Image (cartoon, rainbow, N blue to C red; front, side, top):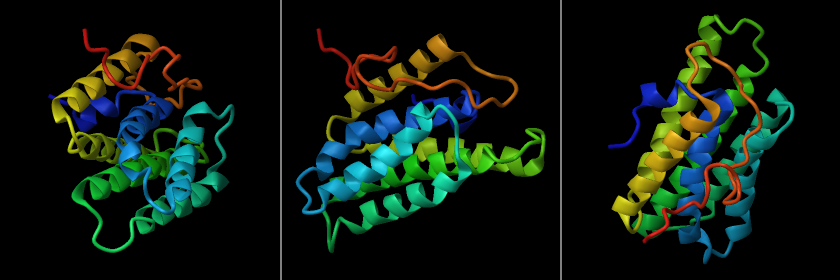
Length: 184
């Protein structure tokens, strides 16, 4: 079973986006043969930049959202089902990042607006993971998503109070390891 939205919301805000980004990264190879594959790569890179940035800039939200919409548009007419799931996984990853960026300019972390952005970030991360698990070997994708969540909890902890957290290395050489579980 995948972590719930409530489970995901206990991660730092960067951890939420990291969780979504790893899932979207696993889904992205489905879109590599698109004529506009560079648009898809740019959308994912923009979302991932929220995880690795030293400082969060709410002005970056427009760039992330625009790139995500372009990635969905890059699919063209009547795309294969897997392409739809992959593009929407990237889109939801980006929307998770946009919500974190929007929250970053709010000073009062106890405000209703801040809590809404956090809830939406977790919601979109959950959707990104669910959609990435509908592509190809879903059992392996679910295992990879569970491993990512538990790795984020192990390395970065869970938070009763909302925090942005530190920059996270989501690459295969980072603390979360390879994107896919190693088959023994």
